[in-house]
Image (spheres, rainbow, N blue to C red):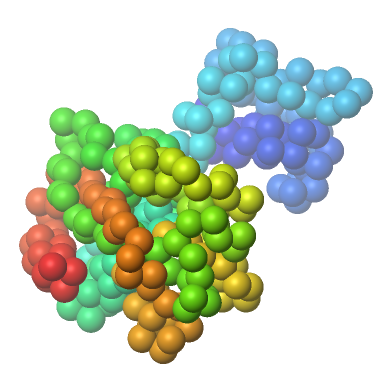
Length: 281
């Protein structure tokens, strides 16, 4: 097994065609076929079924896909770290849920840039499921998310407690029965509390799975939504958004999960997190 074979296999799965995979990899179709055959012989399983409609992974191929992706990405990281310039000592790989990047994840990045200039930084955006898988596979060292699950080789650090406040682009918007109301998915606990507080209100005609997406929409169109106060401080200060003070305020806890080995090799990490959490007290 070699990386060329694994990457060729991944290209076939992604493209759904040996011809398209050869075009993506800029090699001949016969090379793609030979690499796939070599990989299948070594694994001892048929990995791809070729049909008129295209090429699809077999159950064995589907199981191999995750490992192939991990091996390919770990090799990329190994190349990155071993080829670091002498001025850089290590790489910090961060995964972050989109709603935790503005005003928190980005400040971690800025802290490292300003205070630990010998550390290279790689940042990835993903869902909680993505972050858990990336941590488990060693693709990231730090996950910033809303779940506290970890393995024995990871530490959980309680992070922000966001205030979710009801804001509107219009100062006189009603708290209930607002035709411009947007429901923003903010976790199971928020969902339960929101349902109890607004049991007699209409169902929102528009919803977003991310506060960042809702914020982008409300920057262009009128709307009312529960958003983390952390990401709308500028809009509130400039009078672009108006907090509806009489509406209930909810909270949402976030966490930082960090690889223990990486954490022990970073003398700056705990000070970084402590200083940023102090800003949000």
